[in-house]
Image (cartoon, rainbow, N blue to C red; front, side, top):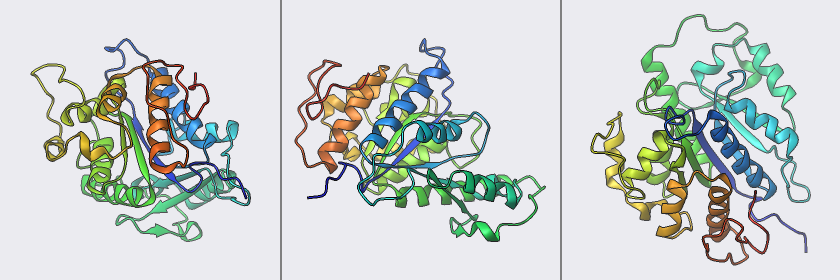
Length: 293
């Protein structure tokens, strides 16, 4: 019988952006990057494809994902030649670049990542048909809002589960913070959702709204769209973790603990091997292997 990786046929969405609270929490930006890197590395090791909606900033999280795939190739099944990452670009992002730049990047990433460009309504565009010159007009707020919401609907359809961490709650360009909109779409689609709230930001607020952790104070920041999470409870996460495990995931700042819990939930949902119950030990085994360090 041909061996198959536990998550080889699954696509896992990662939602991450900078969190303004890292310093307050005694953490640095590197902690958030490390968390993303460890989560992504273990997903790849189990054969999953990563789905990400990002920009093309030098040194951003998109670059980090691409670097990870170079260092940690996806452990795909025999004969599975699909790329490890599917990176979707909304219209305002790729329209600001000339076609040859997008096409050259796609060629450089061939075999590692699929670069997919969307129009304002979320329809995929052929890279060969992109405009030769960059759009020199700044996109309107309406264009950003429509394009980003369309992107996030596409991301939801492309994923089997989603992981959220960090996230700004001000200065965003869509109708609500990006991580909030992606998490909201996952909840509405009954898609497994993992909320890593220990790194603050939007993910922390979502964890509070789902009653996974207590509010930090009575002065709750009401960002656009936050009231929509009141319709959900922790039961809507559908991520294979029990209440205690989700509460731990929502508050931990220990990357190895967070990764172990995410893997546990995913393997309970999608894997065929029983996974032992979390025993409060960071070195607890998952399917008999030491937890990641």
